[in-house]
Length: 254
Figure 1: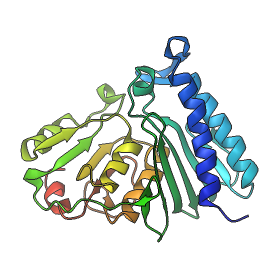
Figure 2 (figure 1 turned 180 degrees about the vertical axis):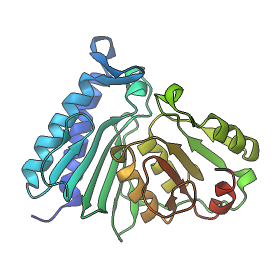
Figure 3 (figure 1 turned 90 degrees about the horizontal axis):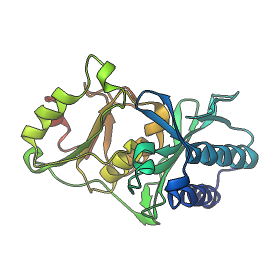
Figure 4 (figure 1 turned 135 degrees about the horizontal axis):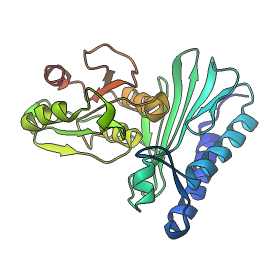
């Protein structure tokens, strides 16, 4: 059965309703830790369970990889899902968290959607068909001066255990740019690059389910996705997304 963007949006928005129900009742939210500083909530589990059942039921030819449940069989063609990207933000009652769903076939990203239920913003892209926000086509910014740019980043929750923890890199870039933002959801950060709300985003020590959908949305919006050396591709341990025009200046600071 061919993948229908309308069907996928319906499924993902239903997942958003599940998340919102728990977001609106945070005093009763069950929160636990997978490891120090790495949180998981009942909402993460419920959203992923729904998406796994809905996506594999509707499209049984594809495997599934979710942050909470792991990998099924058939990882050559698979859904890549982060049920709530920004779990800590979610648990604190902040709005910048999202549901991220991507379809990857033989190593190539074909479809990506990132839904921010608390903001009611739905971003999506299909390979070679452009990127959209709430049905309207979007594109990256045209900023050419790094000094005037607004840059987003994030910090791995386990950064204290990392030899390279992004703090030095942040200080270098913050001194060369006008605005710095830290929203707390890599999937959303990528969509903000695609929508021209920020001019670039970088982070390190992520997982593919954090960035797969957002990376495709950036590319389809006319942006670039590389590692910190400028190699093109989706690299979870080093991702740099930009509008393209400030990329070379940013790479010098990586």
